Image (cartoon, rainbow, N blue to C red):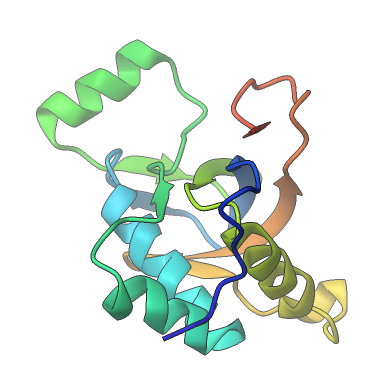
Length: 159
């Protein structure tokens, strides 16, 4: 089990972080991909911080982080129709897609931050390894947004 720093007098913090992803190739993905994202985050963490990934997956039955589905650049109407009809949506390597990770335990932020900072530490932009795989689709990490003033309104820190 991992020993997380905590203080009963420290204020609790909640972090919502946006990950901007770019698919490596054209393909498709279901509009409700949250379980894929959750598994991909745990898989990515297992390669950069295996003790944290194991602790989050096996050692604790409470969900200490949440993941959104991949956010497509389509209207809400088109997304709902795709969900109702259970159809795949197209992925374009020229576009970026967003995932939101919410850390429900503030002590996870430094661990998540360190894993992000060391993921591509030695790779050049041209040699970056894929960041995550959702279903059969592979994505690169383009940007991380953790700024509470982000225009999307999806990134924030509470506490």
